[in-house]
Image (cartoon, rainbow over all chains, first blue to last red; front, side):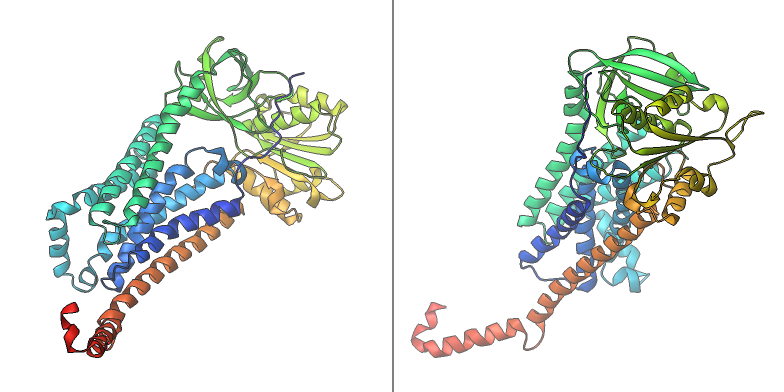
Length: 450
Length: 64
C-alpha cells in the first residue's frame, strides 16, 4: 500500500502572521521618523502616514494572495482571501484619502480653492506616476467589485488583476521614492525598493517559476465517470514516478491545459484517499464556465496539479469523535476523509449528515454504507426534493436534524467538518456552537463571502 | 460566526492603522512645533550655541 498521507498542518501560526503584518505596516512609519525630517502640519503628515500604510498594505497583498503554504497552511486559504478582500477595501479608502488630505486644510475648508489645488497637482509632471497609480487603483476596485456585473471571464480578470496590481506597485514605488517627503533619498526608499522587488518576485514565482516546476510533474486522466446528475469523478495518475503527498480533505488547483502556464487552473477538493495509491480523484459538478464542459475531458488528457492546499483536514487535529456535514458536491473532501478513516480503521464514532437536492445528486452512497462494516459510522441523508417512499429526511439540513444525528456522549470534544453551500455552513456552525462546540473544532473553508 | 470574527479582527486592525498614522502625524508635528515655537528646541539650541560662543571669548570667533 502506498501511503502518501501528509500528516502535518503546514504554515505559520495566525498570531505570528498577524504580528508580522502589523510590524510590516508600522515599519515605514518608524523609518520615516528615523529620517529626522520635520512635519508639514498635522493633516498633511496624517496624509503621508496613510499613503505609506496603503502602499505597504498593497505590497503585502501580493504575498497574501500568493498561495504560499507558509502563510495560508495554518490559517486557511479562505480566511486569508477574506483578509485580502477586506485589506483591499481599507487600502482603497486610504489611497483615495491620501491626495485629498495632502492638500492640508485647503480641500476640507475651502471649496473654491480646492479645484485649483487639485489642478496644480494634475498639471505638475512630478506627480504623474502617483496619479497613474491612483487611477489604476480605481480600475482595480471597479473590475474586482464588478467582475460579475461586467461579466469579465475569470481568467481574464485574474490576468488583469495581477497586471493592475503590478502597475500600481510600480508607479506607486516611483511616486514614493521621487516625491515622498520621508521616502526620497532616505533608508525608506531602500525599504520600498526591497518590498516592491519581493512583490514582483511573488508574481514571477506564481506565473512562471511554479508552472515550470509543475511541468516536470504532469498527470493524465485515467477515468472520467458520471456518478450523478451533472456530477463527475475524474481520476488522475502521475505521468512518471512522482507522487502527491496530501492530507485527506485538502484541495488542488487543477489545470487541464497542455501547459501549466495558463491562468485557467481551478480549485477542486481531492476526493481520494492518500493511503490508497498514486491516483488522485476529484468530484466535480457541472456548474461554472469551465465545469460545464467537464464531461468532454477524455482519458489520457494531460493535467497539472498545484497541490496540496487548504486546512480542511484531520492532520494535526485531535477529537474524540468526528462529525461530517456535507451538502451537494461538498461531499468530495468529506469522502476523502471517510475513505482515509476507513483505510486506517479509525475506531472513533463518526456521524455523517449528507444533503442534496435530488436522489440522483446523492453520490457514493453505496460506498459510504459499506464503510459501516469497518467503522462506527451512522449516516443521515436528506433530500430537498425527495422521491415518493424516500426513507431518509426531507428538506434542508436543520438544527433538529443535526442535534439528532450528532449523538456523541460529549459533542463538545468532537471535530466537525462542514462542506457545502454557505447557508448550510452557517446553519451547521450556529447549531454546533449552541451545542457548546468550540469554534476551533468546527472546520470549514468558505470561498464566497459577499 | 467565523466570518463575523474575521470582520471584528479586521475592524480592530483598522483601528491600529489609524492610531499608528495619527501617532506618526502627531510625533512629526510635535517635532516641527518644538523647533518653531518661541523658546522651542530650535531657539534653545541657538541660545546654547550663543552661550558657548560667549564662553570661548572673542579670540575664537573665527572658529564658528
